[in-house]
Structures are given as C-alpha cells and as structure tokens.
Length: 254
Image (cartoon, rainbow, N blue to C red; front, top):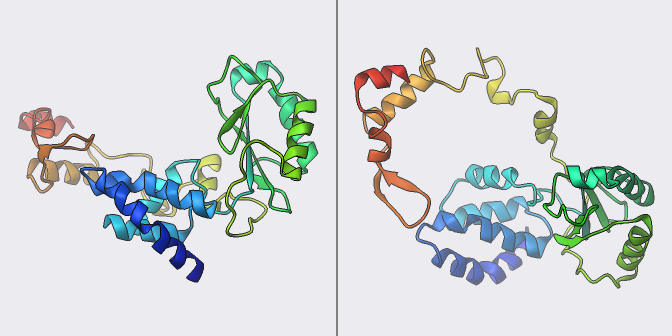
C-alpha cells in the first residue's frame, strides 16, 4: 500500500522512540497502534503488520490485542465518533430519549456511520461521569448534561467546522458500519470456528481433559521456562508456578 509506506517511514522514528522506553519491546504495542490510528483514523492491516514486524511478534498476536480493545477501530470510522453513555445514571436521567434523538437526527443506529463519512454513532457502557448525566464522548472528549437542543448545536457546529474538538484523521472512506462480522459471535453466543465440532467446547481444560493435562505437564516438566522477574508486569519466575504445584497429589488435583 503506497500511502501507508510513506506514513510508515514518517512514523518509524517515533515508533523506535516508543520501543526504547520499555524493557520489553512488546510493551510498546499499544502506544504504537495508537500512533498509527491517530494518523490513519483507524488501525489498518498494514499498521498491524508493521507493528508486528517492529516488535518481532506474529501478526496474529497484534490483531488479537487490537481486537480486544473497543477504541481500536479495525475499519474506518467517521471524522466524529459519537459515543453516548447508556449506563445506569444516564438511563435514569433520560439516556433512552437522548439516544433516540441522536438516531433520528443522524439517520443511523448503533455502530453505524453516516453516508457522508462525518459521523459514527455508538451507544456505550458507563463512561464514569455519573455526576453529570446524561453524558457522551466525542472523539474521546467528554460532554455532559445532554439535551436535544445541545445535540442540535453540536451537530451543526461539526457540520460547519466550528466544533471545539478536532475531527479524526480519515485516510479511507468509511463503510456504513465499522463492526467486524466475526465479532457477532460475542453477541449471538455462537462458537468460533476453532470450537466447532469439538466435544465439550466450553470446558477450558483440567481434570479429565487431555489438553489441560498436557499443558500442566509442560509446566511440571519445565518445557516452559521462566528465568527472572522484571520491572514490568510480565512474570518470568518458575517459582511462581512451582510454589503452587508442590507435589504430585496437587498436580493430580488440578
């Protein structure tokens, strides 16, 4: 992707500076992905591959991390991401009416983007601003005490380029939604392809489960090596495992 190649070269010195801040290069994963998203408006596959290359990780490790966090967008979004809180305090104070007004005003629903690519709309869980309900975030900036009149002013200012919050970068036109099809598994309760046709797919392992026993044996036989502790949260100390698994009876109990 020629456009990304130029961006990559421009951002690479900053990426290297971020990596140098950490004892473990992998710890720079989130800051680097944030950096790419700041300049692309979303986290592209090219950005994830470049991140994996710099940190010597597999692309799967990077994508699994990116997919975990809702504020990393794996598809392009609007220049203004409107996230309305539907937590308890906001709901008590009229969030349902505010969300309905947003949907009517914008002509879109949850996880959708307007045809002009200007607005992406999302209804989110508690934003921890319960003292000023109803509230929302616009490109992560808080706005409180929402009313229909305030929403009208907000949207008019965004359309006119006079809104106090800067629009997000947009290097690629967004589609009607930024939802990823595979993520529907979370909402519908369906199994991922890896669990299809597997006996007892909800069993995470343990007594009587071959995969759990094999994994435990790997720890006991020291096939997975731990060497030391670091200043970061990664634990690299075999005693952290062996202090718990002291004898054969406890091994069998697990």
